[in-house]
Image (tube, rainbow, N blue to C red; front, side):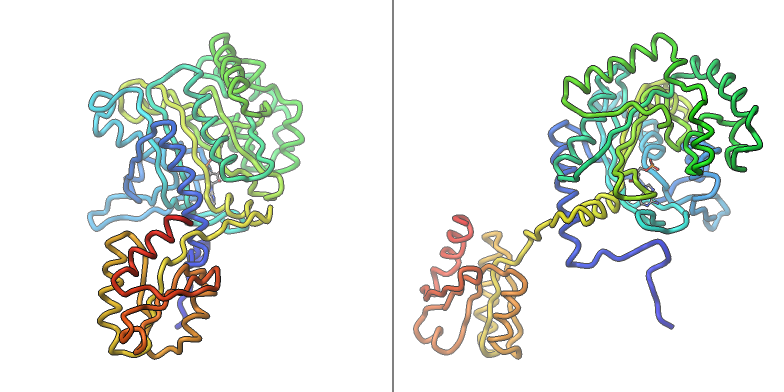
Length: 423
Ligand code: AMP
């Protein structure tokens, strides 16, 4: 039997790993800039957490979750997103009182959704996310949106479109839903079966439908932005003003409603046209109702999450090469097996100086070992043979400059240390 990675999953092979490190570095740097602290949470949780926290009428909960029973017959699910788990952890650990409030948290990690795999859509994919809990003010929304914007700018992703909307609050939605339902029901027969089903339970989700015909029908639908209550309208306007002050470019798009049920007020997505059908590289919004809904004290919050695979796809598509800067410092080449012992001593001394180094096997020819250095952008090679031992001087090759030098045995590590520092 030939094994393969499960459909919708993939391996990140060593020659691609540096791209992921590059993205993670930028995310971590921005987390530090804005003082967001890392949180790690389980890969699986009780199924009910996601049913409540993501929403029963969402695609994720309706059809995309990996659900399983444990040996005691309890229902669990692999996490399809991060916010529900963070809120669970926030309530469980009473984080609003034990840590400073408001609270800024970020995370990375694999998420799991059973959807039909296609370009940019996987069954296991990586997300990063930022959550700002405890601040009801527009500045919190603007901060979260600006962090995403800055991360994508730092990653040098071309042509990111930030689309922004307000989905209102429970109060203004009540009146709006009545109007929207009236509109939808009038044209019911023309909508796809999924939209027909959602019209009653969660009419705003029809805006999320990818069906072109439904989208065209919705062009004349009443929109939330024109039905906001004065408080929500003022909140949205302030978010826009703050983003202008922060030089974050956006478009207001009344069709951005997000796939999850728990959003209130601000909803946003970052999109890239050239990615095709799966064009969202991130998104988020305010979720002022969720913490109370999951059993905590009523607490406002706003968050963002982004997918790493689509970022890598967009960088590849835009032909932006991420250099692998993670090359080996020193390759030690003992020309015979008897020189392995001294090679080990040198390797350990180099490691003590935080210089990466490995020892070649003594069966491979010098020529092939040097070829390896060339191909893998190794910085230095130390060659140890009979002559070097006799003269108490090792040959140090600078691979990039294609030069070589004899250095007294006991000065080799210091020499390389200084060379690396000066480069
Ligand atoms: P969502 O929680 O659905 O808004 O997802 C946030 C981000 O995660 C999206 O904008 C995508 O970049 C990414 N994402 C969501 N689902 C997938 C998937 N199945 N495969 C790859 N990336 C995904």
